[in-house]
Amino acid sequence: MIEFKNVSKWYGNFQVLNNCTFSIQKGDVVVICGPSGSGKSTLVKTINALESIQQGEIIVDGIKLNDPQTNLPQLRARVGMVFQNFELFPHLNVIENLTLAQIKVLGRSKDQAITYGLKYLERVGLLSQKDKFPGQLSGGQQQRVAIARALSMDPIIMLFDEPTSALDPEMVGEVLDVIVKLAKEGMTMCVITHEMSFAKNLSKRVIFMDEGKIVEDCSKDKFFGNPDLLSARAKEFLSKILRNN
Amino acid sequence: MNLDFSFFTLNIISNFIIKGLLFSIKLTLVTLVCGLIIGTMIAMMRLSKFKILNYPALGYVVLIRSLPFVMVILWVFILIPLVIGKSIGSENSAYITYIVFESAFYSEIMRSGIQSVKKEQMQAGYAVGLTYFQSMRYIILPQAFRNMLPVILTQTIVLFQDTSLVYAIGAYDLLKGFEIVSKNFNRPVEAYLIAAVVYFIICFSLSYGVKLTQRKVQIAK
Image (cartoon, rainbow over all chains, first blue to last red; front, side, top):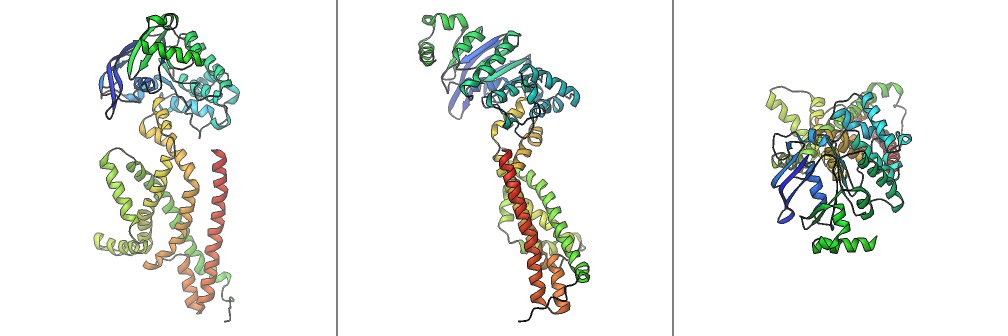
């Protein structure tokens, strides 16, 4: 469903993505990990063209991203994205956050949008908060609203960019629960995370990045079960991060 | 010095002052609304990555901010009849000049307002499929406007005071009303004293209003 072919990207002289090739099939749950500055976030943001690329090709659901003919807003509407810092719209209440793009992009009627919105709010367990403003919610609740906002667009894939790293520790669980539930329901997703136990639970596949390159792209069992088969860089990362957990 | 305010009757107020006050208020409101709309467009141009939009907007703002307001008021008043061949009257000339001039100031306010919104908000707008203009309209500008509301109102108070500069082209504003009264009764000291009190009351209550909104904006954040 998503295909990266030899994708490279530079910020000035600095190469953030170096010849990345991989693909994601429908139903895949892929965890992307790696040290900070390795290009994970940039890689994920190229999937919905929030970041442009200079070389290579990205195909999402049969549509070439770097074709100037591509209607990017329409494509982005079908790719759900959850940000590290939630990025809810602070001047709109919860239900308005969920309905804005449904109405303006998908052309749903207001009633229809609210019905969808409430359905997904219920799924993340926040139906009772529908009239509150983002500032009145806890970080964990805000992130769950952000997930519901993305889901109410009926995305074909969900992207998570470190969805729990801006949260207080006691709120991480509630957000991870929602994501795990989604994965179990068969949602295709791509998750950047440092929560290794979560990665172990959630994913079937792990992509490890370092210095803009995809160093490992393997099954979860290989990544966590057989460290001896991994590259030195991945082994070092894994041992560091597991020691911290 | 003997002060005598007896000339200042209700009759005088309704005949001379109200007319001027209404024009001052109208000029302020029209300039506020048009200036904000044009200023926001200029601000968006200035923040654009396209040089063809960026440079003209920058030039406009730099030029306007470097010119004395009274000079521009006079100049437009003289220039327009030369260009279109007939006079449009001092009041219409004032509307045009004030909008042109104040747009530059409102654009600077809106520019910092837009910059005060985190750039990830724009990304969040894009991520749910909104276009650039939709993201601006529904996400960035409402937040920019809310953040800048106290500054916009403060600028508008200054604008209200500056409406008195239309004396240069003889338009009938609040100050002109008092000037006529002072000449009719030969009581300039008293008339301008009352004018000062009226300006003070209006501007002071507006500033107080600004303070209240400032507190509200801070709570909403």
